[in-house]
Length: 371
Image 1: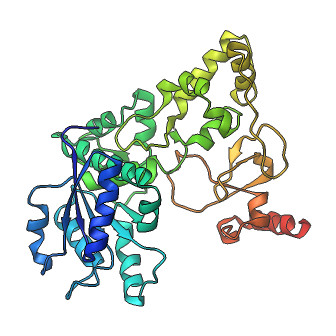
Image 2: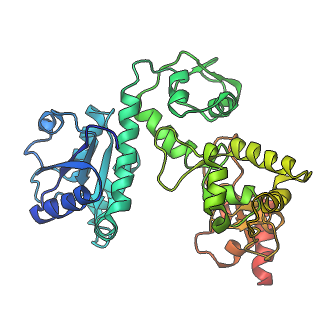
């Protein structure tokens, strides 16, 4: 934990909740929580931010505030102090009024995170660590006196080849070239400046979210042709220690550099004289080297092994031939293509056929008809 302790301002009109949830956070991590009732006027933000807390936590309802709600307060803090993270605390079990729902839809995407009070009470350690990672990340970015692309990528601890891929993922540092030209025809400026809030959003909502440059545990395991359980074994994690992402906003559950895992896996296979693709050879090579048996990744739609991609709807391994290209988001082209498994097509209520190509919709209809 960084020194001094992280300072959080928690704004809540319910005094019982204010004390209870502040207590959960302080008991779970090295955090000092400043408890505050909402100011009488939105213009009094200076009172809240006078000591520059590491993070501001706002109850979305603030039903006791006479002239504004939590969404208005959070928006005002974000607009005036964009270099500091702002997080909603709410209770999803309570119904929102129509006005609150509208405010939520309008404001929430511009903020950094939302934490449910029930989740915080049930597992304060997990939620506190989310806030710690967020606050420390912002603190690191605020500390940078030079805010060019090179400094941003250094904060992510990226190597040269990784920097090239990150540069293709749309870092928020401006472009060189015609203003009206498509993004693929422009190049990022080495001297462009980034704002803390934009850099934080790009790292957290693009680089850590979409697989391609960094992988979560499921994608990492599938890259190596093994199950997530095998990937999480101590022996495997020790081998891949240098591939783990340790840069700004590193999540507690982990991310791993794809290219570093490939390099490590290749060395293991070369050491065992196995000339196969990583998907088919790493498990065998690791077993010979360490006498540890790893289980192969299993396709969620046909049960064959090893699965070679991940269903973006169910977040489960699947074979490419048992899945379809899917377009659920605007991820940069440098990231992995999203795919949806036949299992999700048949069973998941989250599957949306309109996100398939016309050819894909025809195949999906055939898959559903056959089930």
